[in-house]
Amino acid sequence: MRIAVLSGGRSSEHEVSLNSGASVREGLAAAGHDVVDVRLERDGTWRHDGEELALHPAGGLLDADVVFPVLHGPFGEDGTVQGLLELLDVPYVGSGVAASAVCMDKLLLKDLLEPHDIPQVAYGRPEDGPQGFPCWVKPARLGSSVGIVKVEREEDFEAAVAEARSYDPRVIVEAHSDGLEVECSVLGDQVSEPGEIVVLGDGWYDYEAKYTPGGMALEVPARISDTARERLRFLALEAFTLAGCSGLARVDFFVDGETVMLNELNTMPGFTATSVYGKLWEASGVPYADVVDRLVALALSRYEAERAARY
Ligand SMILES: Nc1ncnc2c1ncn2[C@@H]1O[C@H](COP(=O)(O)OP(=O)(O)O)[C@@H](O)[C@H]1O
Ligand SMILES: [Mg+2]
Image (tube, rainbow, N blue to C red):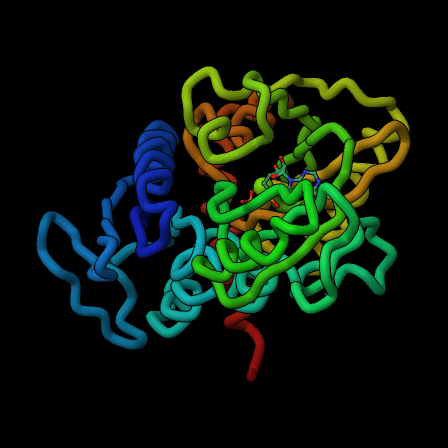
């Protein structure tokens, strides 16, 4: 099949996406697909072979059978590109418009999951004030730990809110969890073995720890009890389903003894062959090329199911 891989994008995760895109293109080629490389520049233009693309509603994208938008953050993972792909009328990998938008927004996702008894840390808006100390102040719709501040003292709260607001007018304030950070990958209706994030420096899981080689280690299986493991895998699929996701997600938790709390759900997680998403599948017996190949098949079946509806 002919698969167009979108990478880059307008968000601060542009470089991360370029790396993810390169791996996905390799994986798709290894699975036997023809790959079309589409770059989304930081200024928002779309290019293929250096040429700027003109997009036409219902016109598809470069004759691709499926589009794989390997884009992180705003203008890519948040439903905007998904909406554009719907209008182009082409099957695409991953969640649709609504689920992408909800999961990108930490406040919206938490509000959606709260009535369904998915355990989460206490949270609120800046006007609700700090959630004890330390607490966490974050841009609601970003990723890669950009703009996040851990606030230790009351007098630092307002500056943290201002910092987060400089990235996003929507800001979330969360209570601190002392739990281990444990993540798992969802692929269709399958959930991987959970893995534990071990930060190797003395800080938290910030941008540097995430992207500096040697900044973190993934411990698989996570050092948690069997009960916590099963609970986490159950909650991951529950949250995925409640948020209306499709295809894939990486679902991140805090695990404190037997207490498992959902932190966030990423509809397009970091996707290099050494990113957590792929490594967890590898540890669960599914090689990277199989993961991307399955995602293409899921994209096609979702497209067919949705286009069979009458609207
Ligand atoms: N409530 C919290 N308690 C403890 N640590 C947190 C909390 N919120 C965030 N962190 C730390 O900050 C990191 C990034 O926060 P996260 O909400 O996952 O944002 P991002 O979308 O940028 O990954 C987490 O992986 C964790 O290390
Ligand atoms: Mg995170």
